[in-house]
Length: 364
Image (cartoon, rainbow, N blue to C red; front, side, top):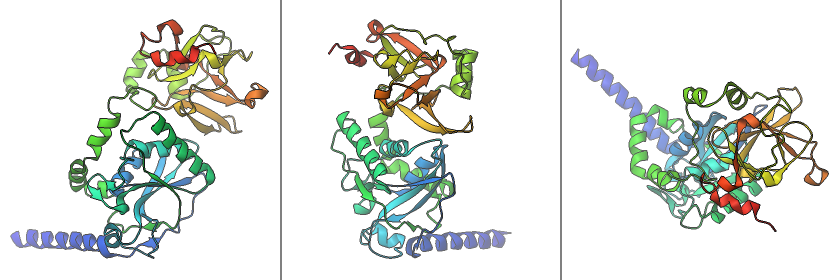
């Protein structure tokens, strides 16, 4: 019996050792995977690709994440060559996502929320150019979006130091050996030990943990809690993408000054300064307080595509963009459901914790 256990152990260790060795020295191959219909791809570098892969795979809108390398001139680099810093590549992940459920801006935001974009010498425990952060764009539109996200973060002074995350044109993506793919799933004990020791999560918590503003901190309660907190209509609208009746809702004809926030999380969404009477029977706005406060998704429920609007953090269904608004606003109208909103009067904003938005109502 002892011999059987010993032989089994030796075989298992041998397989592990072989996989570990190949993971270091096996040459990578260029990614030749075709993008499937209805899918889109994005490339990001944020230090150890085990961690970045794990962080992106937590997003339900992401279909798959693959670890690899990008940026250097060496063909078919091995992990050993890349990690030594001599190949000129960075560790990079390829994110395959559903563009009808999320967008490129959200993916860039997710990267910024899970790395230290101010570290010019590497990322956390791992040092060297190969572990520095980067956004690899494929189109000018992606480049502009990445630049805007970084600009917004700098204007808000979220980080204590300047953001140095590079924005570069995507090149060849080399697939890392299978040993590195889904490492966090295949080797959970080793991965958790590495991640905790790296200091990554401590840094993320120190920056984002207690922030309750436009950059995060708003939480979505559990489904059971939501059913207690919301009316049947509010739940159906926000959680099941329902629509309330026109002219039979709370705010369609509300003309008071104030702020409209998410009924679920309280995150600020719209201001009365951008509200107008559309004659449709639903609260309508020219624009949100900040376009980064909401997310856009393509909705095919009525066969033809519509742009659905959801809150960023609670992910509540709010309504749609309808192109029947004022000509001077490019006909854009944010048609929202009152059931998804809570109105806070201007005079109550400071007391309710939204004092900084009083600036929206200053007379010019």
